[in-house]
Image 1 (spheres, rainbow, N blue to C red):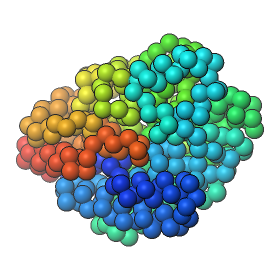
Image 2 (cartoon, rainbow, N blue to C red):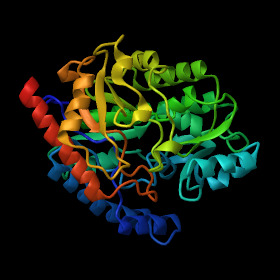
Image 3 (tube, rainbow, N blue to C red):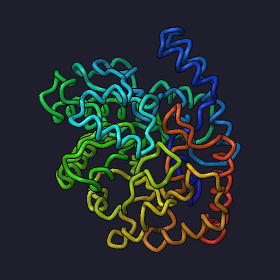
Image 4 (tube, helix red, strand yellow):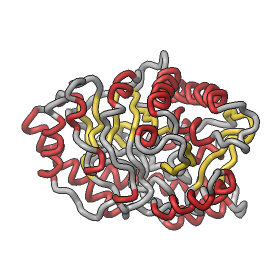
Length: 387
């Protein structure tokens, strides 16, 4: 990846989807149109998402995840052995259905709209996960490109459902196949010249907050909380196995606290402090973290690890109507500059603007204005700290 300037501006991944794309996605799901017909519809949506990002003036773009039902369930279309089910469909698999339904209500989870991939047979790659999507994006922009992939911990943790994942004796067996699939994909992306690959691991925060052994919900995944230390050690090992030996491309990882509702009080709360030692041990270049929301705590958690990694600093809330001022963003960056060198900081929203296709977290117009504000802040920072 060629660094063009300091404080590069990018996005975390997803962009709001237009209604005509959602209609196409529904028709494909119901068998009314073929996948090839849907891809042609999605092509136009990707071009629209790119136009918004380029007009906002950001440095590193994504395809807006326009082809995806959500940030990770799309793998069901591209992997053998995976079935896509709604969160509501999974209710029969939980030990205490009434309690879990209550959890979903309290967390404002649209259980019939959010879908989860479940491993029902041996999981194998039917076709590339995102390589083809990258080639289309590359052919339609001159900007640097970030490609997002669900991380190995998230995929193995969420896709292994006891009683449904009968091919696998345990989650670890599934994780072995998931790591192999992701490694193949990442190698091919690197060879194709992608600039930035981001692994999404939002459920890492769930591993450290909440009661052990209780079934819960996090970013579409039906999860049972386990021992936090064991979970974080497992996640670190899986990420490192996935990226081992990969070179020639920037590797990042995104961690947040959930992005399915505009109600801040139903999303996870807690600082990154318990995670930081494990994040630093992961063999990746950049940590893409939310810090615009007070729920994330302070960037001061990195005071013992100054500039240990690059930081993709979350500076705007993708779920709010407020367009943060450039001055507000600059102040957030200056707080991070206490612990990170200027050339280690990238600027981005906390999370995606449309993580789940049918759950609108913001409008494209508001998302555009937020990006414009980040770009203006980056220009102010470059004047003060140099290009």
